[in-house]
Length: 306
Image 1 (cartoon, rainbow, N blue to C red):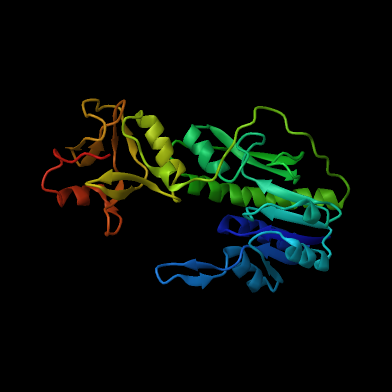
Image 2 (image 1 turned 90 degrees about the horizontal axis):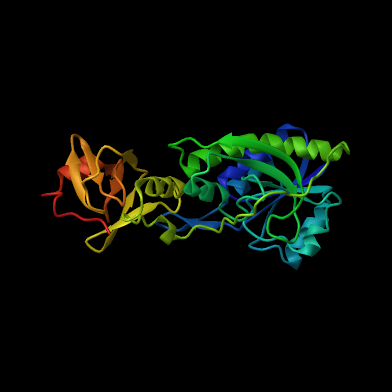
């Protein structure tokens, strides 16, 4: 079966590899254009484009699936398109090109967390279980019928990045299985059922920790925005980056945002009990252990995070 693969970030690469290893004829890859990376803003291929080049697969670069991109997709004559985090909408004209349609690997248990940041929103919401599905792409936002499902437990210290990495690998197997079933004429898609929730793309503000909130909510927020866009707070008018925090329910005397040393730990007060900082990146400096940062401060008693 001739497959067009659409994807952009690193989490899509395991799916591309899985389809190649399963023996599918991946005739082309659709991905976002090269983007500037690093301080020098060097134009760099997407992870999927780079992997496709290594595999000798034709790459179609398109910021959106317009008439030109649709024509190039039609030229490679795919039987089916597999899409994993491409980063753009697929219009009706392109949806109609493959005879088996577009099969989307989505990292949530649809209809929960429809949208661009399902894993991040699941962690921030405190979900105990999430997963991935393969479904038939339609014009609506992640509304199509589901072919296959897998589940994954969310650990109490899982970051979105760690959870997404696990799902990218198990989901790659699910995607290959789904395409095999479609090729064999044994696939059956079922309408989505359950409560709908939305997972809009994260913004920088989603990483701003509000110390008046309960400690558990702050911990979930920090884990959900790690590694991107990252958790942060404000100190002396400057943004300070933080890695996920640890819960310290044994300390309840700190005011929200107030800092204190407790043994070897650096604690911050919240709306409930304290949390312990792990690593911190002050403005203009590298990420460092919170204890090392605290040793460089004259006094933590006057320090308040905003």
